[in-house]
Length: 225
Length: 125
Image (cartoon, rainbow over all chains, first blue to last red; front, top):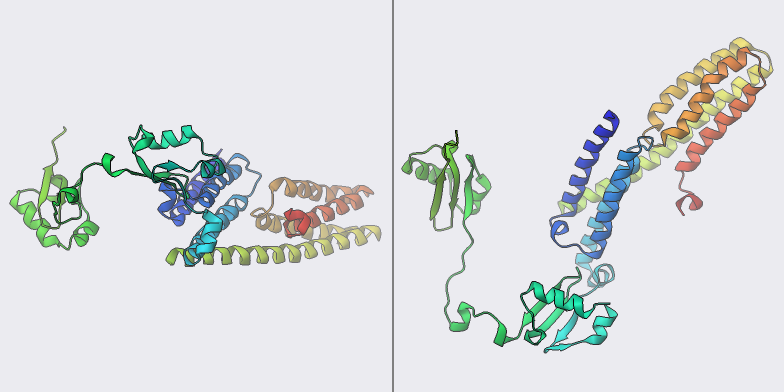
């Protein structure tokens, strides 16, 4: 029992390390090669946990090899467009100028239901609203609506305003986020000034956010006892 | 870039480790087979004391080797060799012919460990 327990802990750490090594892209959008690696890693990791007669190396070595190869392949595909097309494929246009490319859809084995389902994700229920649609290499469909159906944006009415980064969390449940302070170009002096102005200690703060113009929001901890 | 270097380093460590483990297995196998041959020769010559000494030596070597190789090889393969190894002393003292077949079984098992680890084309595919 303890062997299985320890093996599970080690492999859990290894799988987390492997997924982190593959990068953030892995969690959100899976390229075909990344999907294969993810499935393989999860499958391989279970073998040495289930069967204690199998040495751990049988699980560790293939996981590290697959993940390392994937990262190396990603680096190579960044340098070579051709290799990128071989490994990940290329995006395919399925609707252009409002006309569905049926040949392309057949080639991709993409049914009308699949297309409509993807359009529903964009709150589009009428195919006439679509100007352009493309299937990305991840299999996700990206849609551009015709101008008549697009939401009005400030630039449409020539209303221009400066774009700013969103506020950052400077104190999270009594813990100072030094990275966020640095990101905003502020220092600890500013944080302490705000705290003394509000007559609170860092440990009393539930949340403090601030933007680049030093507009802050401070929420004190509630006494839950 | 850091990630790429780390991955190349991991692959390099895996390849080096695999080659070194093969060399270790090959080296230890030869040592074990030589000891087994000596046991057979002494047993055939009725030199029981020397044969017993060699069996003790073999057991010691095997115990050390078992720990190393269990990181690489499925333990069920090793258990078969361990059980044969445990019989050697009794078979020698009983002056049984089975001692030779048991030695051959161990040799076969030891060679199997190496053959299963070596990347022969038929093993890969």
